[in-house]
Image 1 (cartoon, rainbow, N blue to C red):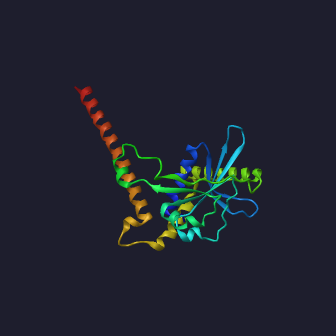
Image 2: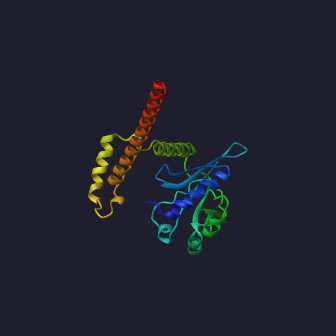
Image 3: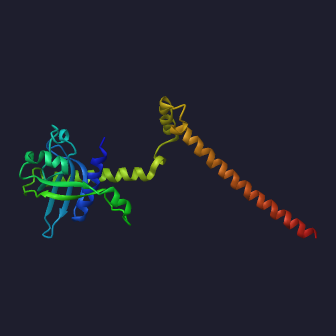
Length: 230
C-alpha cells in the first residue's frame, strides 16, 4: 500500500509533467529485467523526436536504500524526494540523476484560498539531470507505456461503473465475509447494517411519496364529486 505522502507526491508529479507538456503514467514495467518505473513521462519535442523521463519516488531512508531496482532507463532520470530526505541522502545520489523536491502546501494558507490548488503540494528542481541514451529499446518502452495507460483507463472505467459490474451473488458473498468483523456495539460501522438502513430509508421515502400522491388524487376526486353534485 502506498503511503499518504507517496500518493501526494505522485499526484503532484503527474500535474508537474502535464504542465511541462508531457504525458505521464505510473508504475510502468520495464523490459529486460529493468524493474518498474514509478512514473514514466513521454513528450514529443518540436523536432519530432521523443523524450522519455523516469521518476523514482522515495519517502523514507529505508525506501531510498531499498534493494528494489532503480529503473533509470530514460533520457532524463530523477529522484522525487521530500526536502528532509533529500538533505539526508544528497551525497548518495549519482551526479547524472536529477532531483525534484516535494513540499506540501501550508494547510493554513489552503484554508484561506479562494480556489484550492489542483495538487497537495509543489515540486522544485534541486538538481538537473544529465542526458543519456535510452537504456532499453524505444519500441519496447512505448509498448509498455501504452499498456500502462490502458490499465489506468480500465481502472477509471471500473470506478465509474461502481458496483454495477458485480453480480448480486458476488456482493452477497462479500457481505458474508464481513460478518466475521461484525461490531455488535457499533452497528454504524457494519456495511450490512448501513445497507439495510439505507434500503429501509429509501423504501419509506418511496412509500411516503406514493401515499402523498394517492392522497392528492383522492382529494381531487372528492372535489370533482362535490362540484358535479352541486
